[in-house]
Image 1 (cartoon, rainbow over the protein chains, first blue to last red):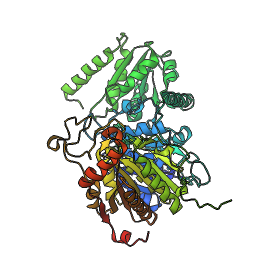
Image 2 (image 1 turned 180 degrees about the vertical axis):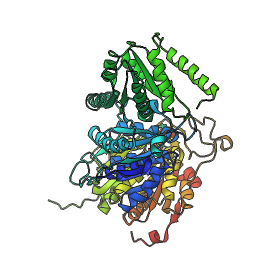
Image 3 (image 1 turned 120 degrees about the vertical axis):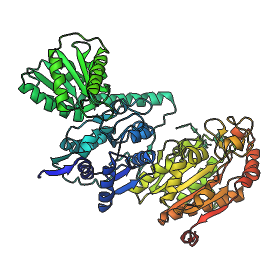
Amino acid sequence: MTKELMKGNDAFAEAAVRAGVEGFFGYPITPASEFLEYMAKRMPELGRAFLQAESEIGAIHMVYGAACAGVRSLTATSGPGLSLMSEALSYIAGTEVPAVVVNVMRGGPGLGNIAPSQSDYNQMVKGGGHGDYFPIVLAPATVQEAIDHITLAFDLADKYRSLVFIAVDGNLGQMMEPAELPPMRVLPEEPPSWSVYGAKDREPNILTSIYIDPPDEEVTNIRLLRRWMEVEKNEIRYKEYELEDAEIAVISFGVAGRICSSALRTAREEGVKVGMIRPITLAPFPTEAIRELSKRVRRILVVEMNTGQMLNDVKQAVGGRVPIEFYGRIGGITPLPDEILEEIHRVNQNTEDIADGQEKVEWLERLEARIERGDQ
Amino acid sequence: MIEMEVVYSRPESFTPTTTHYCPGCTHGTAHRLVAEVLDEMGIREKAIGVAPVGCSVFAYDYFNHDFVEAAHGRAPAMATGIKRVRPNNTVYTYQGDGDLASIGMAEIVHAAIRGENITVIFINNAIYGMTGGQMAPTTLPGMRTTSSPGGRDVETMGYPVRMSEMLSTIDGTSYAVRRSLHNPANVRKSKKAIRRAFEVQERGMGFAMVELLSSCPTNLKFTPQQALDFVGDQMVSYYPLGDYKVAPEVKALKV
Ligand SMILES: Cc1ncc(C[n+]2csc(CCOP(=O)(O)OP(=O)(O)O)c2C)c(N)n1
Ligand code: SF4
């Protein structure tokens, strides 16, 4: 297949169609609306279900219903919508049905703005809804990766009967990039045996998230945790960049990671021995890879488009072995490669220890000075 | 041997078990009517029920067909998701008044607006049963509940909502009627309405809801008979029984 120039959101939506999505339910929200608009046209062409719901609450409970009916279903939203969906996400996890949510992240909290951001890291990675459950979170950095992640997300959702988030930001959704779409998946003829499709010649299937007797709920929680441990064993994904001889390492995900990788190339040309790990699964998190990395480098720089949400997971992995620095742009601002390059040089020259928490104080001082100077 | 005719037996759509409902509660009656209708229409094998959060949260234990359990109030959205991807199945929700008329108001209204081809069985017992007798959106003026201990004061707590009337104003609604379960004659009428509501779905005629006035002796602190009398006297006078919307094509249905 040849590569075509495609706009992020359209490409993701078409990828979802080809991954065999039979139910799309959504509610308009910038910067995810194009996904909905694409599906509005495409799904009926194929005789598949598309519906603009009355709210994100409605949309995700429709996804929940369709998932119980055993078809691949998804929604696409952004922060404020995801907040409304928290209830159903917990139910989906508790009922152990597969579902995929694309979250095109924007600046927050509150209504925030519609500019790209990574500030929903905790909301997705730590679950968002009530109770003990463990969603899988994928963080693509290119349009191609996002396309591939749509299929991957459904495969993982089906395999583990799990909730899977695809964490993209407004940049990716709007980006035009050459990319290749997957072939059209042949839709399964039979519904999954556990799903609801009518109890003909079999016992009824009951899908519920209620376990009124605590011992039953405990067993369920154990099952969910054991399944998650399987996910942790099998599904951790990350990308390494120039780590062989690296003395300092950048850790960054999604579009921020992509910007870091271009800053990293320049830094290399300028003689800095810098490498990078870009987590692709934010959950399960590549803890072990980062732990190992921290034994080989003298300093780590975490870069995010939030106030340091992944930073905590990195810290846990590193366990104080080497100093960790942080750099982030927030509120819907995307850092420039030059900005990151400057940070890489600074970190490379810094030999001082940093007390836990101090990295954020120092970052804020640098960021505020930059804002004061009127630099972008 | 004497030949005997079976005049009463457990519907096939029921599981052979007893329910957890309190003595005198009409949830069980409503369940039975649904089960009989599913049997008579021969649609048990393709039925998918959507249970609410409320006393009937375990409805799926009593029905012998596929079931899902929705979040509080969201059954119509969940049913929509199922029906849209499995249009050949018969999909119905079974919801209490807190579930349908309070927390789930947006979901039920929009399911009606879309003319969603589902059947809704709405149990109006004027109270929150499961959580211990708090005020429902349907609690009558002056009625004492655990969260309106001085009686429902409509000035500060609002007025009871009449869902059948409200949904009847929506173009997408094909069938919206209110019946009561307080005595045998009304139980029979309720069953007829439930039958019609399922026929509406089977013929792709859109959104159908049957509101059933129901008893909650436990939380009203009544004996079973007093509770039924309360439904027949007080509730029926605030919530008049009747057909609020019967679309012409539904009227023409021979049931
Ligand atoms: C989001 C949420 N809020 C509150 C509750 C607690 N809750 C459980 S059942 C119920 C009310 C049920 O009343 P109703 O729908 O009238 O049904 P009934 O029990 O009377 O049959 C409430 C408030 C819940 N489970 N979920
Ligand atoms: S509490 Fe009320 S509604 Fe619930 S089972 Fe008992 S009588 Fe029925």
